[in-house]
Image 1 (cartoon, rainbow, N blue to C red):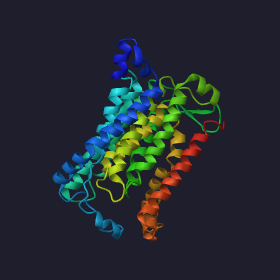
Image 2: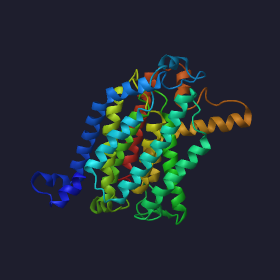
Image 3: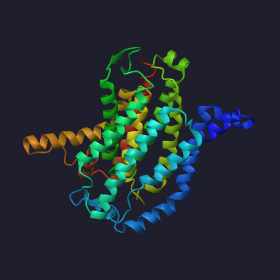
Image 4: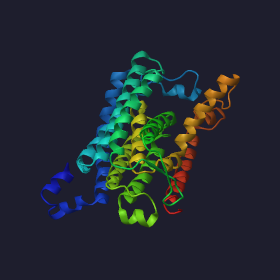
Length: 356
């Protein structure tokens, strides 16, 4: 909104700063952070009053988690409010990528909210049936894929190889939707310990802020040998907003957590990362940068598949962060070590920009 106003008046005086994506990225981060910190305490108190007993805790999970009973969930609403305020204030609202990513973020957030609401009201950790959730997610992702693909090619670019790509044609629409849905659910599975999902999302969003900005600049994209995507640089502002909103949430989610983000936040954030990766034509790089999320999702798939085939488990408990808890690692140890893994993977992901 502020960008359009400044553009209307031809960026007079200090308003000329709004012309630059780097300035607006910093402003979006600061706005989301401040809004989140301001609304946080009252928002958490409201959730605590309305939810009573808070998020249901699995009886078959680590026994240390039973002490978390009464902690309210749906804190993802706080993240979404902070993020949307930052987006609407500082992003170029004529950019189709903005609306595609906003659709995924809010759409997945709404689906996650329904799931959280079902869990809280029924006092069960099951929530909305998985098939229904996936159907809704693919519907939202399909719309976003249609908007994004109207602005980009249907090629799948290969990291580490300059100018090499796989032409997917119409299948790219399906692929793009799968990336968004997969990212949303992978982050959702990671969100099982205090702060575990939040910091890796911050790291991934910060990494893709750099990638989106470079992909949107024809000079940098040509120099690095990465696909140039006109107007993709605007997504750096969205990534910065995600960082700010998540930092504010982490202030309250740090151990011991005063609130959980719930599916409302994890699905929305994962979906947003997926949409940004598709729009920036760095889908495979997302699997590298978000390798921790991939590992968490893969551990669940492997566990379920192997148990159905043999009746035995590979991991003591899935997702894999619970496996390490069952092995005796303290929750804080698991969280910090997983953060370190996320940083390493982000560095590897950034290295793909030059090693081509």
